[in-house]
Amino acid sequence: MDDRLRSEIKDGALTDDEVVRRVLGGDVALMEILMRRYNQRLFRAVRSIVKDDSQVEDIVQEAYVRAYEHLSQFEGRAKFSTWLTKIAIYEAYARLRRFDHQNVDSISELEDKGLYMNSNERDPERQTFDGEMRLMLERAFDVLPDDYKSVFMLREIEGLSTAETAECLEISEENVKTRLHRAREFLQRELYATAGATARTAFQFLGPRCDRVVARVMARIQK
Image 1: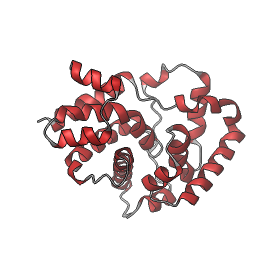
Image 2: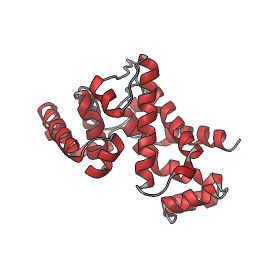
Image 3: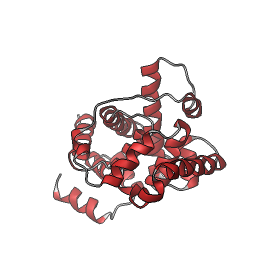
């Protein structure tokens, strides 16, 4: 990463829309700013759908490539972050559709079917995370009913608004509120009353993982 990008990422001087305009104008290297800015959000959004961390990383990478390829279609009617998150969610469900050989037309239908990948392997990086409560929360999350996972991840852990979550998942705001309430009740019965304060530290996407995705995406879009 050069000094210019390092400074832009640290200072956050450029808005998302400004970065998009400059990337479309030919300054492709600035895509790294958007990736560094939203890597964790996309990881968390996809992780709420797909349990295999290696698959999640691949999907996040594909989402960035798709976003770059269709960047001219971003019209600014919604936040760029919402547009990008929706692409990641679509990529996650597309992966499930290919994996399960299902003919499903919408996010809501896939959620209703409860199609989730499972993996018994744990990422070695994840095993090094500090915090017993964080690990407990992640385990409790994985046993949430399928309909509640994406809503809880986007609203409670990633901090999206009700409206943003509804737009990303293509469900009503009332549905978001209902699912979030039920998810909280479920987790409280498990451990959330104790672990809630650490919710935002769960499902981190930092260090080598973040660098790996950025490097792979930049190599693909700068060819």
